[in-house]
Amino acid sequence: MTELRAAVIGAGFVGRAHIEALRRLGVPLAGVVGSSPERAEATRSSLNLPRAYRSVQELASDPEVDVVHICTPNHLHFEQASALLRAGKHVMCEKPLAMDTQQSTTLMDLAQKHGRIGGVTYNLRYYPLCQEARAIIQRGAIGEPRLVHGGFLQDWLFYPNDWNWRLETELGGDLRAVSDIGTHWLDLATWLTGRKITEVCADLATVIPVRKRPRGRVETFQKAGEVASDDVKIVTDDYASVLLRFENNLRGVMTVSQVSAGRKAFLEFEINGSEGSLAWNSESPNRLWIGHRNQANQELLKDPALMSPTARRYSAYPGGHTEGYPDTFLQLFKDFYAYVRNPSTQPPSFPTFQTGHEELVLCEAIARSARERQWQRLA
Image (cartoon, rainbow, N blue to C red):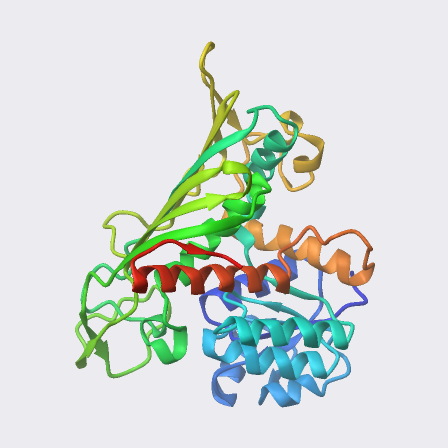
């Protein structure tokens, strides 16, 4: 992979996760773009990167860069991805891909027009035991999937003085919990079962309607603390529950929250099939529960020697050696860069711009359902 050189736009929490994974993968990093030239230079210095670009335009014009990772606030994704695609760069974009389906459609068209590869960072499907769960379902070991349920719970916005740019609709969009963490769960549910969602019925709530916005910069997951602040009305969702109907009569329900005390990043799913069940959660990512009716239940500890051949390659360490969140980026980027090097006529195994577009279709249907208080069918 050494013939491909990458750069990263944005070096906050998730941008640094991208940089770490790229280094572990052996992809040369050309440099970084920050929210200002000064922040870019500070990041370049602290992470020992070759170059601090002064702007996205300067990065786009660098012929030495092949792939760009976009790790910026949501409202910037469309403009940045558009410029990079036109400049001939492949793009790995943090979710959501864009602010709406009109923008995501344009990005898909641009990628096709310029012959570039686009990926979206739905990295949580790259936990080794999520890969194993999919392999188990695909080979029919739990029979026909009947029910899928679970959710994604966090507490990082539990207090009224917790603040992040995602709370501002002009930066994050009209949906928050659904868009930020719900789409991770929805991506997993559809990818694991191989079934698309056909209808949704959603209930959204803003649990904390007024928050205190600090008069200064706050990084993601950083506490605002006792600083000067202003009261701001919040209209985005702290919580959502969504009833789901999938293809082939599969039914489901998802609950997401960013105000659930004690839950840091608790993504869980359970899939009940006609022959058995599977359950997993991200706070115990190296354990997969396998449920039975007429025999003892099982628990598979992450061990590539015991996993399916298709899932085994996503586990880098032997049994007894845990793998977690940072490893999911590495495994996703491994798939993405391999495809960029050797595009195939087979569908990509990683989440693409099409995946990102489909998640935005779901988000718009969920928002419409909550607003109109009725089921919404996806076109």
